[in-house]
Length: 222
Image 1 (cartoon, rainbow, N blue to C red):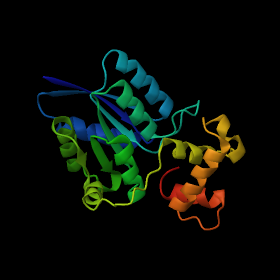
Image 2: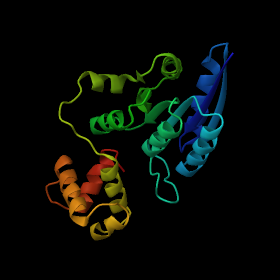
Image 3: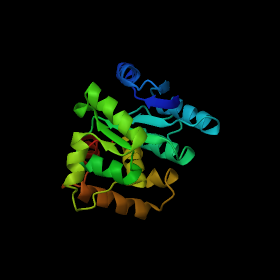
């Protein structure tokens, strides 16, 4: 009998219920699934830290858009995925997201290199069931939108790294640029330079932070 420990993190309980029902209904006869669920970063971090010490998860499903942690250290499913990879290196990491924008797909593949990457609008029950079994046996498994993207992988290296995401997140919280170095271990001039690069990356013509944040939201970075 194969015992598979699973963590599912999504802020919509009905979506988690749907995933659970599909996996339980389609699992192989020799598989036993143990599923923990969380709907925000704080709960997920506590579960990952606790389980990593005793019985690490075999598979972790992370939605990208999640309520951030109280201390501000974890702001998305990407942050949780990186934590899980560090604490449970053998766990299979699966990203599920509504974002189907090529910037975002590129970024997640480069930063996380997930074992499964599923765009929610691609998903049918059968695709989730098949994908789960493939992720267990021979990852990676990408749903159709991601597969199509990787086939025509854009050559330009459009990449928003962890520090840039943190800059965007802090700006969106109303933190002024001159105060960002209280939260990020960089000089104000280095932070300014990154902001300029982000504005070029997102084609911001008016140079305004509001325009940058609006574009970053539309592209799925906030």
